[in-house]
Length: 531
Image (cartoon, rainbow, N blue to C red):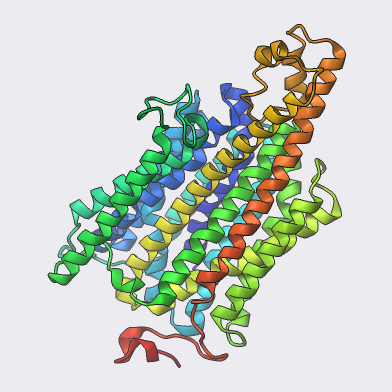
């Protein structure tokens, strides 16, 4: 279990280290924060696009054998990050890390399902959730310290060291020979891969290419329309084709890329919807807070770690302890209560947040959001694992990986697009209301085509224009006011999404207190698989 725990830590530490490194990417490679955040997006893209195929490879080759191979690959990706000479290197390193994680994710689920049952299985699943949260705490603390004192590169030296330790511990795992009879449906692999790529690229470029009307940065346009929403639509179409193709193969008795029977009941589908929403919200918060602290406020990665510590520490503790409530409350009750907490926390943050993240009201909001988030991630994962037989654990793992990483990529990309668009509209309207900022000055600094910039950077740009001191002060004050307004609105939008999540949460299982699901293979009726 130590090896599996550290493998989850390895992946999660890598993901948590990326937001901390955004400021370093911006400074070292001279790119805007939205481009730097592409490392987060491409990692999630690679995992989501390849995890279903990775699960079948694991079943065919053998989980332990392929687990060792991809741990080595993950270590190589960390080495690429350490030696990166450009943003392209960093992006390529995260693509490689995502490809390796696409197999690690289902491996962890399969190995847990093989070795644990009942309450022990719930505890083991909870340990993966706590490992994910523990990685967030340690990444923001250790990574923030290293990023401030040394730089962002040593942070990925930690992931390299973890990969070496996990590889050594993997030789203590139970060996398996795999099943050469397992077939990989290449058509389904292409369909789901294309769908994920189109969806992620489309969402990630909503800001750069335009939400509806094509901007100058768009590679092409369709009758003046941005290609970003078009890619999203085609991604949805290819996703539907994947499901149609998979159901057709299952009806014919052929082996599918993923067995959709693990989503055959409403409670499993509800768990997937809930997982997507909570992970997307977490990714949005993890993108928003570091961006504001490091890029907008110009503060250090260590400041970021301190600001995010209440959230990540709370997620860690909650993910570890929530399994103790499974014998007293049903998943539905826990799910609805947890989404209620996240909604209240986000509304609270939209009211109390200021440019100083260390205020007690802000810390309280992050703690409450962390309680709800930590409980939900462990809960919905446990619902999926316990509702499927162990022979389908790899399929559950692939669905979990696809959902979480697509949600992370979409949450990061959409939040970035929403914030920048809202900020652009707000500043555009504010400029019109400030006669001391003439159109000639606005044209010189492109205030109406804004991105997130610090006050110092904005002053430096304005000082190279014809603006006098009064105009500079007015522009900086306007930018600061609109950034904070945009942040508040962003939290309020997330609160609305959290409230909507009560719909799938209401369809989670209603196990009576004291009941623990067991392997459905052990009974004739899966709906009666309880002890």
